[in-house]
Image 1 (cartoon, rainbow, N blue to C red):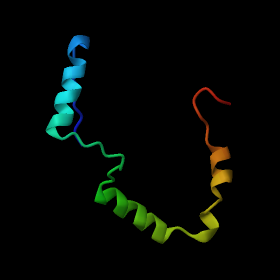
Image 2: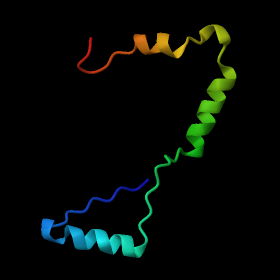
Image 3: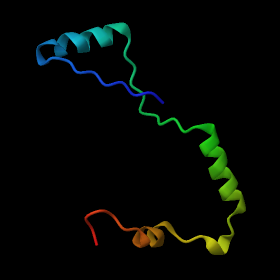
Length: 69
């Protein structure tokens, strides 16, 4: 994955947006998960025992979140 950060002067922003759309900007909402991550999850799903699993609502209560007790 690559990240690009651009600093565009306020007076050039509209021009920049028009240019990017003209060049064929495509926005993808789809998250791309690497195959190696998918393989790890598949392996774990295949080896977990039913008695080790708990419902999501119960698991969520066990989590702690920043700023919340």
